[in-house]
Image (cartoon, rainbow, N blue to C red; front, side):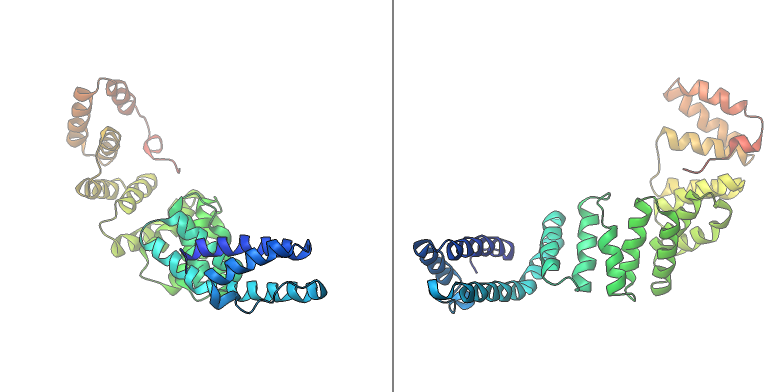
Length: 300
């Protein structure tokens, strides 16, 4: 073919539109020029198109429609391969466009639908990939990736109940998926159900022990539940995984103070105050905190 599958499809679509216009306008010269170019560039697809005839315009238009439909059907495979290659290269926007075109031709392709949703999500985390992801769950209800994409799409859209339900379907099909358990836990936390998510986070940690996001969630959850010793252990683990910075160290100091580790808390606060005097006021507020409830984190 002359170019990429996307280029070919765009070129032929425009040429077929011009050829159709020439038929309707009875412009034999324009028709001959367009048909000659199509036959020269794509002989296997358009060699059998009839010559221009005023006596059989409708038949010619039907033949043109049939040839265009045939070309579109044969283009599906190359479009999907092109999209897959662009996806592997990290060109997710290009991949999404190619998958979208393939799905216009073959809308019931479960694999292309899943990859289209994934490419949309990878192109931009806030892209609206929920619609194709949900359609993928209809086309392939036993596909774990379909439910994972739908789960993440629902979570991004703020639909926590749907995210949890889709996450449940996902982990039934892929019980070793840490992201499934993690998103279910996050969805419950967002709905104010912090008291029920610790086992879910523990399972996510077991499946992905070096995931910093899971450790941060464990810190927040245990701190909110009043499990200060556990929160301090999770904070130490997060530090070994690379968590750092003044905000993180202040959080550690707050956890250490709540866990009764006063020496550690004071050492961390001394270091923060020495590096940035503005922490003096925050330290004063922390040290004046009267109740355990005041110390606990709030859901975000």
